[in-house]
Image 1 (cartoon, rainbow, N blue to C red):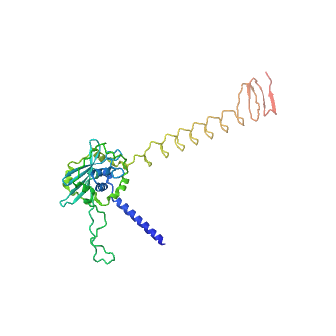
Image 2: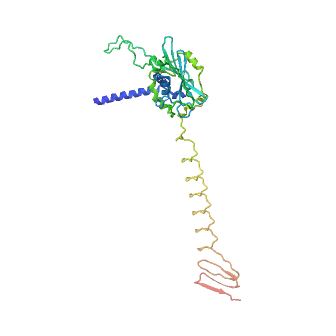
Amino acid sequence: MKSRLISFLVLSMCLTGVSAYAQSEGDTTLLGLPGDNLDLFAVLNIFQQSKTIEDFEKTLNLKETGVNNLDLDLNDTVDFIKVVTKQDGTDFSFILQVDVSAKEIQDVAVIFVSKDKDGKVIMQIVGDKDLYGKDYVIEPAPPAPAVTPNPAYAGTDPAPAAAPASTTVVVVEQTPIVQYVYSPVYVPYYPPYYYRYYPPYFATFTVMAVGIYHHNNYYHHHGYHGGHGGTVVIHNDVNFNNYNNTRNVSNTVNHNNASGNYNRNNASARPSTGTSASTRPSTGTSVSTRPSTGTSASTRPSTGTSASTRPSTGTSASTRPSTGTSASTRPSTGTSASTYTGGSRGSGSYGGSSGSSSRSGSGYSSGGYSGASRGGMSRSGGGRR
């Protein structure tokens, strides 16, 4: 009994954990825009863990990392994302760009790193409005407020004074990339790559389904906040406005957005197995030029009761002589009345077989013979003259 209870508790805890994870993962809905294939939470996480800008660019584009799934030119392979650096004093802009064609460049997102008047480092990533919509801003989550102990608590395990909350906190100043860009050895990075000319480590790979992509990268969201529907705003307006003055946009991307081409991986070109219009003959009830085996109008002779030009074996009106009782011009072999007329051989009568018959001829003037049958017959006559 005790072992069953323990098993039940373990199972309940597992189900609760899975349900909580699924609910938290489902809270982030897809944008329905090209940015669904590049998770900016994951991009910002990789950026903070990189030692240099070149290292960040390489890690972002590796297939093994699994963060870049962007395909703006719709060739079914992942695009190479280059990182362009701009600096104005202590303000840095790291612009993520894709060469859509030999003449078009599209900005994907920009990472702002700056210091406020107190010397505190501020880091934010802003998605381009053509790929993420307006005001898509993400930043590291601020530290949670300290836990204030309840002075009236009478339990055996009181909370310590000013205990920090249990949450993930990213200290921007301690990240390798921030320490590098603000160090004396920092050198601005300008990528030498352009359309169809990429570094040797970048090998083209196929775009994965957006649902699988989001599932694989959702763990990067911990420790960050923002996106649509959040309260995060851009802190350095001057830096952001300077970037907007030189922002790169692509006509190809705008056209694909307007046409809904970036959502085509959600629709399949495979023929549907459901009800559809088809040129293939249907096996169900339909209009067909093929003769039907059921009751229908057909030019083929019917085996049932119908009007036909073929002689019938039953009772019907026919020009063929009948073998039964009927009116006919053919002499009858049975009892019937018949008349035969010869010449003027004589004026006599002759009793034939079982019927009565009279025969007259012109060869005799006053003689003849008559009788009821061949057995009893009387001849009478006046003599030949």
